[in-house]
Amino acid sequence: MTEVFPRTKPDRRYLPDIPSKGGSRRQSGQRYFSQGGADVYSADGKYRYCSGKTVDISEGGLLLVPDKPLKVGDKAVLRFFLSAGTMPEGYESFVKLPARVVRVDSASGHVAFEFTKGLTEYLRRKRWRYYETASLLGILITLVGVWFIKKESIFYFWFDVPVFLYGLCAVFYLLSRFFFAAMYKAYPVVPDYKPSVSIIIPCFNEEEWIEKTIQGCLNQVYPEDLIEVIVVDDGSTDNSVAVARAVAAKIRDEVGDRLTIHAFAQNQGKRNALAAGARLAKGDLVVFVDSDSFLQPDAILHMIQPFHDPRIGGATGRCEVENKWTNMLTRMQAVRYFVGFRIFKAAESIFDVVTCLSGPLACYRRDVLMRYLDPWVEQKFLGQPATFGDDRSLTNFVLGSHYAVYQHTAVTSTIVPSTYGKFFNQQMRWKRSWLRESLRACKFMWLKEPFMAISFYLGMFLPLMAPVVVLRAFVFIPAAYGIWPTMYLAGVVLMSMLMCTSYLLLKRSNLWLYGIPFCFFYLFVLLWQIVWAVLTFWKSDWGTRPSKHDKGLSMG
Image (tube, helix red, strand yellow):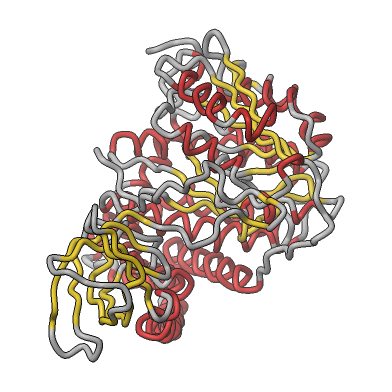
């Protein structure tokens, strides 16, 4: 399946954003390839002069191949549609903008237009402000609906205590997440704080994405001499090593020895790959980045800011879905990732207890990481090597002595499963690791801030009890009393609307509606993986990473 995401036009420099004497090397906005069409109207917008095929587009202009001649200085009104996946999320829209011709290439037929105002300003005035207003109104209506349903739940509480008690606890838990997330603030940039950073990329059969990952890690708005990138190939059977070494050869003159490629002769597992990179690292801070994740140019600058506080041992950034426009499954995951990071992790960060420093972008103090490195690598579960849940497991080690926080302004994007088979395997692996590591965290979480401790135990109890409550509400009560779970379904719709409207408020994107089908997808499909995860929690199959080591030395 072809993944759909914005395709950026290569800069003439391989690393355009690294600092130089004049600051960023990039002189203009990022350009994106475009295969749509555009109509060129007269300057007053009254009649259409010609049409054309778009070549690329940026914040400030458009490159077009028109079907009629144009000359430099011509003024016009451009009308075109920015389809989903052409530019970053939120820009998909019909656009009508005044522009002027600034360059004509007679050889290629390309005509460059400069917009009289930027796309961001145009969309904010024409579209985004209405989205924000609608989302705030939607949040208000949703909260009123939740209050009404819960009032009814209290009235009928003694009719079905288990279901209504569960519903009240679930609403309390979810609303508290949104409340604390609204209070969250990212750590500001401290100009004089510039520790050295080692970025570790564990790689296994990622030849398609590894170059983009390496490029993103090196192309940072951060002093070049303070960043090193270490790629550890975990016995890949494709051309991942060859691609990584080709990248190193291509930019050797520019980065010198700041990029290191270390390859295992055979697969040893992701934890061993990360540990090998950590042992080679020289930086004050060690950043783990998955091999299919792509850092924004200022990700490291923002990622290091929490560590100005010596009590913080680990931090995670915000992860977006890179291929969100591929199909309905990836669209639903985009909403889920947003809620998981901007709502749940932000709420946990208020108490300095983020329970999972996620693999796509996680940062650790090197001395803290090295203290727990060997116990983490050698961790066993029921006598078998723990081969997944590495990020949640390492977070538990860190929380034993330090804070763990979320930094919203440190952004990466990742490739998520776009087929249901890979997605279900991934979700099963995540649920098993969540169950194992949550049981482990139960031993110390009660020592944390009381409200955080209550939230943690409630957040563990609710998913485990959910299958029982759903069976009672949708099977037992209708069969025994002939009463359909109308209020329960209404509650699900309202909570999904709270998620959707929050997404619309902060992302201003057409994807907001996909939160509703995702909630029902979770209720009727993903929820039941919890049951299987509990029954098979000892298994160590990786699912989406088919290596012998990560399947407990067995392919069966």
